[in-house]
Length: 237
Image (tube, rainbow, N blue to C red; front, side, top):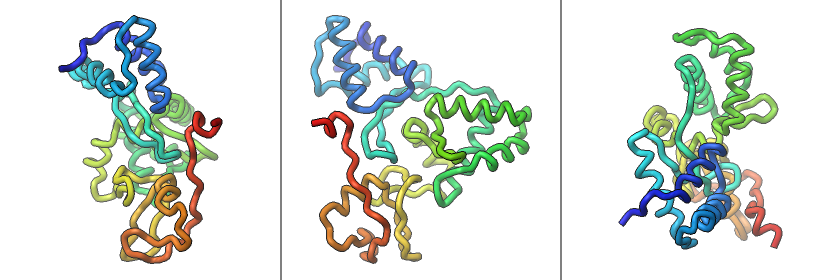
């Protein structure tokens, strides 16, 4: 039987609306805080049930708190599925996604994005407006930016996964290990294979193997094997 929506749930939702995305540890801490603050029964293993009660109320508004994995560190995150953009901003965001998904590296340069702003079918955006929008999308954790290159953020991939799988079904590949969408990843160099594996999944899969080989074609895996990244709470122990 689903939980009833109470003040603890509302506080949790308000925090998610303010933050957009939180890691699993943060969500568990927030769950405990909300329950204790509002004298609600707390059970550590009932976070997903707690969120399901919130989602049951969000569904009529086409909103949802979703769970997914970060390509960056392999950890689980919770994200609130809501994006507020006007028509031309939304069109530019979609064009940015087109550039990112269609690239081999899973990245799009600021120059390419600025150029795509000139091709909008809705109201054109000035360069300054496009730059401001990109800053908003980074601040809202929809995009990530590093040295002038943009990638889809953890929040974006979690919340927009159904859209991405539907709209880019011929372009998107999934990680061979975890089967989630893969953009930031390593790729098998065998031209008849070409599987993708997230960096965190690479670290876990090849840990302790003296001669790493592709899990699909058994060719030698030539890429550098990254170290497993621990959550901060574990690394301090």
